[in-house]
Amino acid sequence: ALLLYKKSNTKKSSSDSSEENEGEKDPESIVLEKLNGAKTGASLLPELNLADFEKDDESNGHVAFVTAASNLRAIAYGIVP
Image 1 (cartoon, helix red, strand yellow):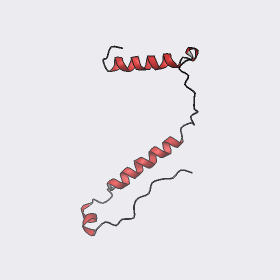
Image 2 (cartoon, one colour):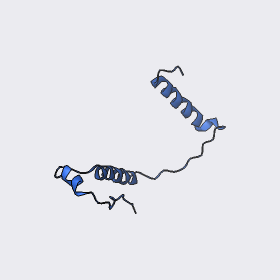
Image 3 (cartoon, helix red, strand yellow):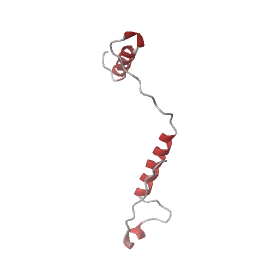
Image 4 (cartoon, one colour):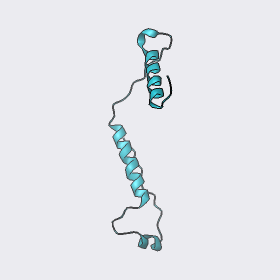
């Protein structure tokens, strides 16, 4: 059950509504559409499973992966690894 964000029930004054163009969405509606779209998209992703990180066991490659990732990041930012 995906809970979506809804627009608040606050009323605008008549002077506020006359300033808006016909068919133009207010900023609150635009933000709510983006938030709800992100939630819907995230619900389509596969479920992730937890994995144990064992720093003392070199046979699983965890330390090598972290080292490689940090070296790539250093190269990308112009830092000597």
